[in-house]
Length: 138
Length: 304
Image 1 (cartoon, one colour):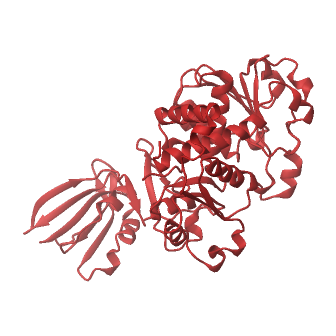
Image 2 (cartoon, one colour):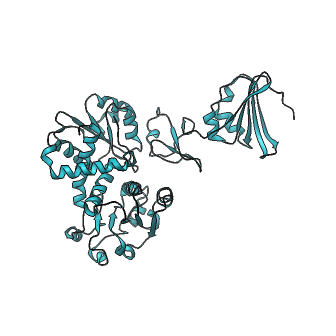
Image 3 (spheres, one colour):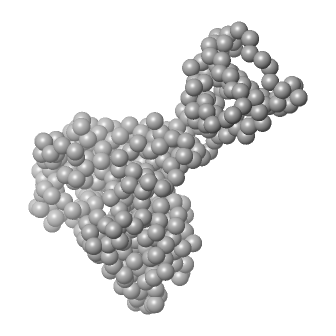
């Protein structure tokens, strides 16, 4: 399967197979007017199979959201048809308005305009907790 | 300017400073009688809790300060739809410090993020209640003279009992604590508290359903009420509420210097006959709560 290589843009590589659509949604890629290619279940030496997203424009990827969803993904910035920069992801300390607190007793359930903020409390097990009620992110 | 939302907002050194201040207030109340002259505490209680509110108000009056009280949340701005953030901003214009109780978890943190004055969490749903933990800690300190090398039993509702979780968290910063967790199966300590706090810090612990079998080991027995408001199901509440009732007979094997604590109010989980026992500390605990609130107000208002 061939997808045209991009001139200036971003390739999100090594996405855990099956997570591309989730990333597409969380990064708001449906709002872009440029070409966006989603490759699912591409063969990978490291992972067996992987997903890839190619974005054909200079798009400011929210690295924190991406790292939260799939910390093993890599971000390649392409300029003039060549790899300009390869970014490794790091779990963000804080994520804001990416996920919602599901605890019915949390203040965020009654105060609709409050930002939903989660804090990384256990790096090893990737546990995020709501800063208000300390419930675990699900 | 800082607030206290969780007991862990206070370092071990700050806790010791609060205990020293509270002990000093107990010994020299006159010295503190006018230290907060002209200062105002706003007690914002969005759910009923007469005793905690009165404790805060008594604390402020004994420091010479005044109190602005919103006693009935039903008649407050919240019932008109005002946000916690806006309430905090408005009250910042009137008072010097806020004590807030709210049924929603995290509401006092939202207030602290928006107020220009210190906020003390006076209980947010089933989440945190740091000033109760301060009362518990002063009681333990005055009874035992230390926080390390103690065997501490927690009995009753360990699942929903926020005072239990907070006290376990607070004690986990000291050495040589052995936790004895006594509860019915349905009300066991949540695994995240057990795992994150007790097991990850390598504390010795015992989990049992039988209070009498562990009684002789305990230095502290922290009793709790099985609270109706924490249950979604009335039948579960009725089935479990009488699970653990402390009677004089159950204390037969207890140490002579055991300290019995309870955050109160009690329903029937401690027999009235125990009130006369020297080991009953729960009414002293109420008094110590007031002194710790006084110490905390002084610390946050930076008047010491």
